[in-house]
Image 1 (cartoon, one colour):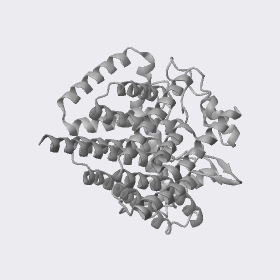
Image 2: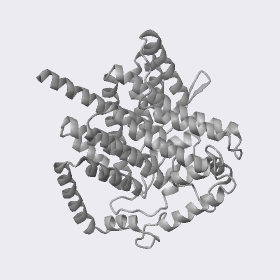
Image 3: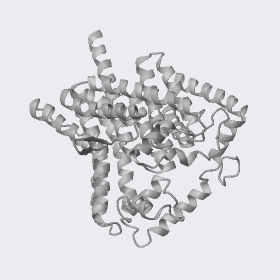
Image 4: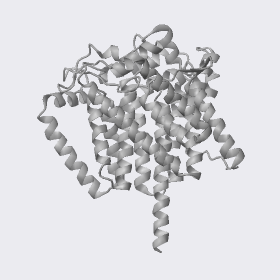
Length: 445
């Protein structure tokens, strides 16, 4: 297994070397790494490299090659909502004295760099060179296909994940897969209760699968290549076997919004047929019936699948307002929930802060609620500044809805950085599709 560490080290080193030789390829390899390898721990000459060292290196190379040498004007459109969110939360953290400000800033800096630097680079290079979007598209397709095939393989291992377990042991990180070994299996054709594939947690894997399904939808709509359906089927099956119900619910909300707003009769007909066939399959399969019954389980007693019921979540919500008594306006500080979990473990009422709403209330208070609402509205507005076609705009709205729905259902555990990548890639991909259609029209004229 030492050979695996050697391969991963070469993988990580390739990102760094390519950042000097071909930054577009470096970004594509980096994104593949984020999907296929759960940790980044590489030492060169006694220097430990992390995700944000790589982000900083990419930024410096981008600024040198594109800003200084080619003198391009920097463009913040598409990235502005993320910058607004982080700057607003940083300013708010000054008024939150519960967590030492140095700890707040350290957590803020790490998340800001991991989220904003890469999408800023992608946005600015993609405006000048569409080839980057092609590189990223293939990086996502290949890496997600590999992870999806591995996810299917894991259905027969009774919850054991040899890949992530070995890496966790090697790097001295907690093995999340062990937490689900004794959990109840939800589907009879899978011996695993939850599957994380190549990622550090099943929830992170489920989120990526949700975003991937939206990307495949965009590819199918615009490129009409039948083999995309094979990848979409692989992604869909992995969503089912992942054991993460929130992925199904979030995607259903995003798809429902898109179909209602787009008003395309052909797409709506396909959706109705899909829903009817799904209903017939689910109603005739005990496993699937039990799984989907849990979505409407208010008191956690309609099925044998145990999880967070609606009544339990309501109790956690009330606990949030009790917790911030005296700190209602600005909350207890940036990443207070993470600070609490590290120092005290699960909260007696709020547990592991398994909803973005709980995190916002506790960390940022009433002001934080308004900041996040503005972030949502700015995202919705941003795509309308870049895209022209209604179908594309509604598809971008859908990926935003999926992110918020997913985070509200599970919490926010490093999801923002993945959301930023998928968001900026999809908006650039759709923008390039629109430009190509405009050129085609001009050629016809």
